[in-house]
Image (cartoon, rainbow, N blue to C red; front, top):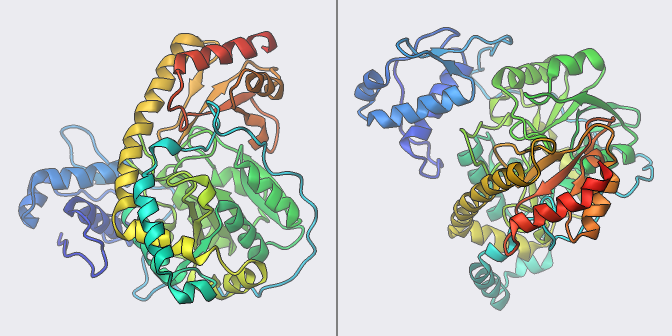
Length: 481
């Protein structure tokens, strides 16, 4: 087996183990390494390639963590057998289906999309540690731009967004999430909510049935209602969204909205078999997949699974992300990676909406990323939030006890406090708010009824006594459960 570790021209200086992992992954996806094929021993491959054995071990560990390979002690590492065929990658880039024509339609009124909570209170979900943000570096970037602002950004901006920011985003998601795109596919948006709204404008007709996880991001329901679509709830399990169950429940659906890397809000991770099955569903049905990778920058345990979009050789996946948690919510910047065939339709939809977020803000974010501040900030915050997650789980087990279990996925900024069956989670959330806390009810994110719970954010706990906050929470909800 011959593998090359020569970096592509714009690889951003990926480390050897990452390049080896990507080369092996491509060989598996395009069928050069067939199901059941044995990989060379780490020592043998290291000798063939002239690299350290630890480099090969790191690449093999990542492949195993994502479900591409399996092995037992004393036996060879082999390519995993899968229920869905991978297929053979074409020699030329895939030619996705033609883009649907932009269209107009009547909008129905949608109820308020979120419960407003004070982000300065403990347990407010989705709020990063704003005190730990690198204010000085951000201030210097903004000051430099405002002292001599580019005149083109003061007049207008490309509907796709500021080109340097699009290039920085494409490099970031390609390097960290194995997303396959170039800057011409990246559209800068005003956060995840606007990305979903644009998707609805382009891909949804009134009456369409859309597959959604249950529970799911609460803001998605409002977008679908406004577009006149019908949300088809697919209950998630320990492996997240189940494509086979979804197809049985609603065979006519042509759009699925998923959070495969860190299911919101349960924290489940979709395994490789289900990812490939979902991609196969979209290819067979002529459907589309919306991959919301809302907090992929903060992985605290285990290996980070690469994006679903990077596995899709059919061009049916739209990938969205946001700076709201990695930077701060008020920045109102995110991105949408669009298949090439859909770019004209999304540009047309953007022109009828808001054109693009503020140009100078985009330029500041681009400079912040290009100068290395963003990467350094992510490394610091990843360590901080990982420690905070462990502290919350340990303290919750000690103070709340086994009757009020708290669980947290291996990524993100929130945990779930599970309440006894029959509990009124809305009353519990209101009681907690009266005690100076800010959790939100899990039911806000459900399409159908399910186990009650409270979502506890742990990003903004700086300056608070965690034991005291949990004792206040217990005092608030005990009379109600």
